[in-house]
Image 1 (cartoon, rainbow, N blue to C red):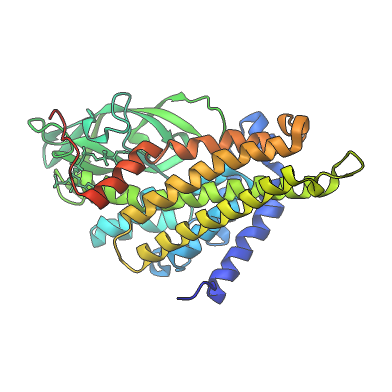
Image 2: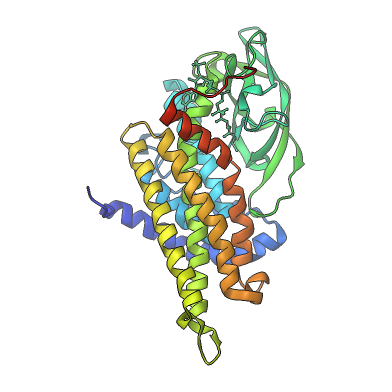
Length: 386
Ligand code: COS
């Protein structure tokens, strides 16, 4: 066992950290306040290879491993969690499943423009009445010529307004309810209409959209993986994606910790720095411990994934812990800063708002527990309708 990062991993971590410190962090407060999606930033990230960190060089990526990618996500999210989710969805939820499930032709056609950051990816699974119960989706793909006509509505689609490639899930078998009978398709931006921009509690530098697909034609070349087996694509994608969201949560928690620790040493009360009071020391100690524990789970899950080992349970555990640490410890950071923490003068209120979503998207904490429990106990939970 070796807890030391490889030299290349440290190098890429430093690259992302320095980029985030110069190009993201100084703007994060205004992007949050003004709900700015920093489109040009992703071009700069692409110039460094960070829009395809863990994508092979042959497909236009940087050729680093999955752990390196997770390190990048932590650093980006530490500066701005909205930037973190944009890159996470683009990479984990679109580019990686294309590599895992695509034909050679699909990989050659769709991956390089994504890996080089020429356009963004969006993952379209969720619908107004299919969130945690993803298998209940209603978007329909009707056979037409040698392909399908797709019609339906998707909700809460990260990157929707700015995406060039959509990985979209639709029902190809009308007779079969639930997860069976769902297929995965690759659509272009001009086949999708953005119908709404979501207003959110946080992550204001990312975009979240409702989209409509109105009879878009998808030929066989746009079917990802086998017909009626798209749910497997969705689940396997989320298994990996959750590790990325866990890294995002660690980044947010780390950012809150950094501010709280510095403030505790500077702020005086009762004639001493508040860091000399046990009440504050105990909070700082808990923060440091919980963040480290969450990070270790994230790194282990990433290591399992990059070694082609089962990682669904490890990823769910990492996300479950990291997201609850982020929610709890961003709140504690506000507590340490007191009244200042509640104002926009310091970034901790933004971290607190941004942290909450990590307990919800790419599977709620309740779904993570279900995934973990199924891995431990087997499929002992009631099936749909039963
Ligand atoms: N990897 C690969 N395949 C998987 C899988 C995984 N981790 N988990 C399930 N599958 C497959 C199953 O093997 C099954 O295939 P077969 O019918 O061929 O055997 C199929 O997918 C259906 O699985 P299951 O019966 O477990 O589906 P359920 O409807 O019970 O749903 C949960 C399972 C609840 C775990 C799933 O719907 C889920 O993860 N929901 C949360 C969705 C989510 O995270 N949404 C966020 C969207 S992105 S913001």
